[in-house]
Image (cartoon, rainbow, N blue to C red; front, side, top):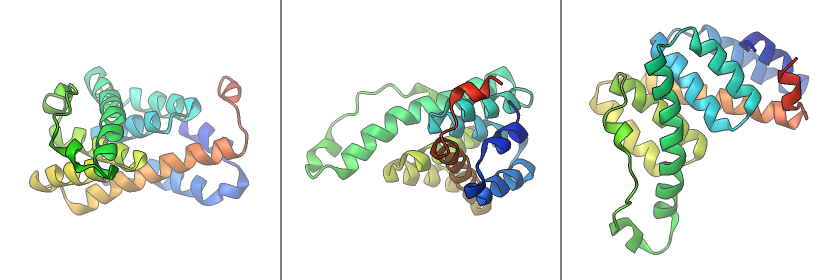
Length: 181
């Protein structure tokens, strides 16, 4: 499924989402690897099979196998970290913040791709998953790496658009079976 086909699944009540998806697809603010890896990581974070399939199909032609795997790794590791660190942040008992996480996160140190790209993907997924602690941590690393604020904002904007695509499709009652057509 292409992004154009995905756009066709977005109902009229979400016309703005469709327009935002179009503008996102043509946006050249980020490098191709950053952009297409972001598409994959954010699509996975939506947990919508149709959205995942469409964005992975588009990205597969633009990313190396290593970059594609790294984008998937960003989504997977943030799925774990966002739950854990959101709990630590929100729990009234602050003792949890003093305890070791005991979660393996080696991919963050060695993602196999440009560290800034991986951090952008992690930040965007953290925004979708609503983990303020992770958002702050990844944004700080990006600032220290001299990633422009406009690039950081673009990554989060793309995350918002991709999430809204998934929500609009689900709200319209479009099923995964349609993706096979």
